[in-house]
Amino acid sequence: MSNQPPTIRRPSVTDVAKRAGVSVGTVSNVLNRPESVSERTRAKVERVIGELNFVRNASARQLRSGEVSTVGAVVLDIANPFFTEMARGIEDRLAQDDFTLMLCSSDENPEREARFLRLFEERGVRGVIATPSHGSLDSLLRLRDHGIEVVLLDHTSPVPGLASVAVDDVGGASLAMEHLIGLGHQHFAFLNGPLNLRQCVDRRDGVYRTLHAHGLDPAVALEEIALDALNADAGDAGVRELWARTGPRPTAIFCANDFTALGALRALSELEVEVPGDVAVVGYDDVMFASMLTTPLTSVRQPMHTLGWTAADMLLTRRSSGEDAAQVEFEPELVVRASSGAA
Image (spheres, rainbow, N blue to C red):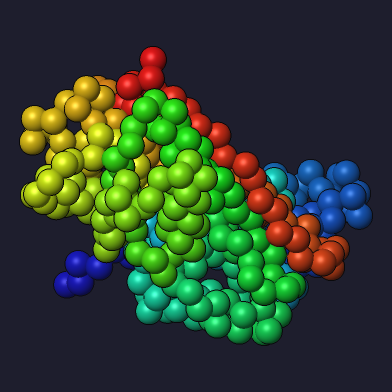
């Protein structure tokens, strides 16, 4: 005897039509163009829909119409609240036009990203929003050449005609360094991520520009730790590497994102280094937990929800209007809290 549960067949449009005593076309009109059906007939069909618990098959409808209401998005790490909040912004905008979101995480892996992009193309998504995990945009440009709208998220566009939404990360890193220099620090550490990520390159550029602008030689004033990822474990390891070195230790640490800063704070606590008494710490992104830590984290705030919402709006608007691709860049903001030692 089979242990499989019995298959329950979903009521179809034909079932509704038979019970209501109307044609399949009339049921379709009630669902899609109710104004074209008399009030009496519409009420009868709607009553039968309720009795049968009929739910329309959106996939079949999309196949018939040729219109797909799904947008694909691939981000670096959905476990990071920065990308979670951006994804919420995408979803909120898509929901306004009854679109759904297919969300994937590349984990900063180019091969994984390429697989998801192929999946999006196979599914025939309406468009793709992507935070590239490496320097090459070949896979995204191929999608665009195949007629799939593409918007870069948290990434400036180096290619004419490719839309993008980003933040001025050079300026954001400068805000962090200006803050620390203004507090009197002269010896810094910079916990940075992989340089195949545009964000890490730009934030590094901002650090070096600011040091030079203040007459500080990075070879003397800065210890840069190249992390293999932008997460808490990498930040923890970066601090332990710093404290294992000989010579003077930095009095201020700038972290390429808040997840890295979270790991740095954990390591500093275990090493019995006081924050901000012994060392100041500044993060980047200003995710939700930054203000909730035992020592609240000073951080460069990015408009995360707005970034996602704007990317989705650009994709939908440009798809329907044929507008030229735009490159939108937002300005970051420094949020000062206790971790940097400034009240």
